[in-house]
Image (cartoon, rainbow, N blue to C red; front, top):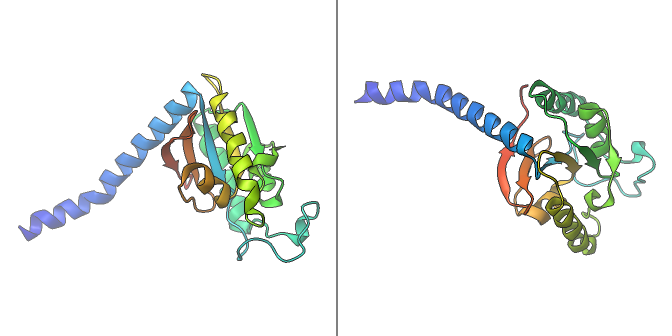
Length: 186
């Protein structure tokens, strides 16, 4: 009995690997069908929560920025899409440098869209931003998807879910989470 249980435990990493491959294939197929978006939390940053007092959106040096690992992570995110030949119709981003840099390093483009701006410092903006995100999701066409690089607070307001830095959620046109996405390897 003990030997059988140990054999089953030895197969667990292999079974988890097959599950990850299936989830990746499902995500790629959903993205190809379109009418969905990837809500991507910016890649890993230097330590801290929020931004330093007195930060300015027009001056990256005053903000919490991507760490070296975060820059590499952003490139891995882009590679994940490139290997699967998935090209977003648009890559929209928050004005914060950590989001813009994630988009630029991962996709080579970054279109600022204010509903993705952080509402961490001003939660009163959250309702309007979330409504704008829902409206844009509903308008996404079949055969196309977008990547939205934003902040945890915005992702949670829209989906009720939490994403770690550098992780994403694949959401359909109604805002329903289809699956979480990690980009640890291409």
